[in-house]
Picture 1 (cartoon, protein in one colour):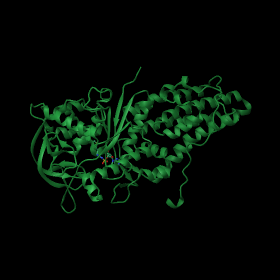
Picture 2 (cartoon, helix red, strand yellow):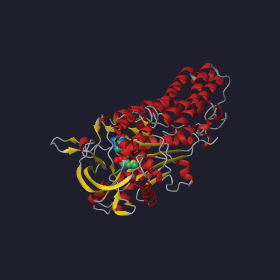
Picture 3 (cartoon, protein in one colour):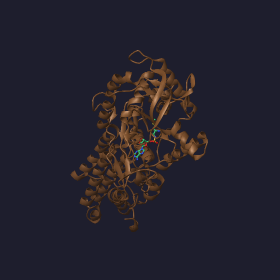
Picture 4 (tube, protein in one colour):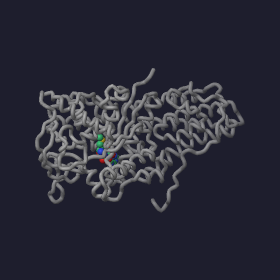
Length: 525
Ligand code: MSP
C-alpha cells in the first residue's frame, strides 16, 4: 500500500547575514524527518529557502553598498551551500524573489481581500498605521508589549530596537478570526501546536486582545506590490509565510503537487517565530479559504558555552567550522542528541567531544568494527550462517526487530529526536553487552559453529541499527551498511526484520572504522 505523502518545511532564512548554527539546526531536524519518512515509504516534499524582501534585507544591502537584488542573490547562495555542507535532502529551495512566489502572494492577497471575516466584514481595509516597529524582528509591537532598556528607552520583547512608524497601511482583521483559531488549536495535546507548553502560550495570546494586523508598508519599496495598489508593498511576513503554499504549487490548486502536499504536515520553526506561524499564518489561510497546516512545532535556542549567541559577542558558531573540526555526521548527531528537542541547549566543545568519543567511537563504532573484524578474520570475510538460536540471540534480535516502531513514534509523532537516538543506543549497548557476554573470540577453537551464530546475530543487530540511524548520519551509516554487505536497494525500512537479512556467505569488504575518536588538542582544555 502506498503511504501518505509528507510535507515538511523549515522557515525561510533572512538573507541579511551568513548561516549559523541556529539555521543549521532547524533544517537538520527537518532533514532527519524527511529522510526517515522516505525510508519509511512516504513520498516527501522537504522545503527550505530564503526570505529576501523587507526592510531588514533592504537595509543590509544598503549597508553592504549593493543593489538589493545582487545582494540577495549572493547571500541566498550561502544558504544553498549550507544545504550541501550539512547534506540536507531538501526537494526544493524557494526564494521569495522568484516569479512563482510573487504570483502566489498576489493571488493569496486577492483571495483574502475578496472574502469576508466570520463577522461578515471585509478581511482587508485601508487605514493609517501609527505604532512601534522592529526592523530586526520585522514585527509590529503594541506599547504594552515593549520593555525598557537601561536608559529607559523602548525595546521589543526580544531585545531588538524599535522605531515609531506612521504610514498608510492595509490592515487584516485578525481579531475576527479568534474563535476559528482556538478551534484549530483544539485541546492541549491535540498536536496542532507542539510542544504543549507552546500550545498553551499560543492559546493565551489568542485569548488576549488580538489587534488587527498591518499587512502593507509604504515607506520603502523592497517587496511585493499589493495587487491594485502598488504604492504599497506587502508586509514581509505575509510575503514570507506564503512561501509554504507557493512551493506546493499555489495558486494551481489542481496541480499534482498541490493535491499531494497541501496542507503541510509540519512547519518546523524556532520558538521566536511561533506567533507568526501559529497565529498569523493560519488566520491568513482561513481568510483565503485554504486548508490549514496540520502541525507547527517550535524548537528551542542554542547558546555557545553558556552565552547567548550574537555577532557583537563574536561567538557565532559557523556550521562550516564545526563540520571541519568534528566531522559532518558527528555534528548532525550531536545537535540532535545533546538537547531534548524543544528545549534550549548549550553548545560546548567538551560536550561534543564527550559524545563523539563515548557514544559514536566507543559504543557504536567499536561494536561494528569488532564484529566485522572477527567476521573478516574468522569467517573468511563472508557473512556467517546462524545455527540454532539461544535465548540470548533471540533477545537481541527481538530488540533489534522491535526498534523501528519505537524510533518511528519518537521521530514522526513526538519529534523527540534525542529519544529516538536514545532508543537506538539502548540496542547498541545491548549488542555490545551481548558480544562481551558471548565471547565469540573464545569460541573460535572450541565451537566455531556457535561463533558463527554469534557473529551472525551481532551483524544482524548492527544492520538494524545502521538502517535506522541513516536519517541522522547518512554517510557513516552508508559506510557501515557497505561493510555489512547490505545492497543499496536493501536499506529502506521495508528491509527491516528477518526477511531483509544479508544472505550467509555474502562476501564482505575489509572493515574500516566508521567513527574515529576525536583526539583533543590538550592546549584547548
Ligand atoms: N525569515 C524568518 C522566517 C520566515 S518563515 C516564513 C526568520 N529567519 S531567520 O533566519 O532569522 O531565522 C530562521 C530560524 O533560525 C528560526 O527558526 C530561528 O528560530 C532559528 N534560529 C536562529 N538563531 C537560533 C539559535 N541561536 N538557536 C536555534 N535556532 C535559532 O526568522
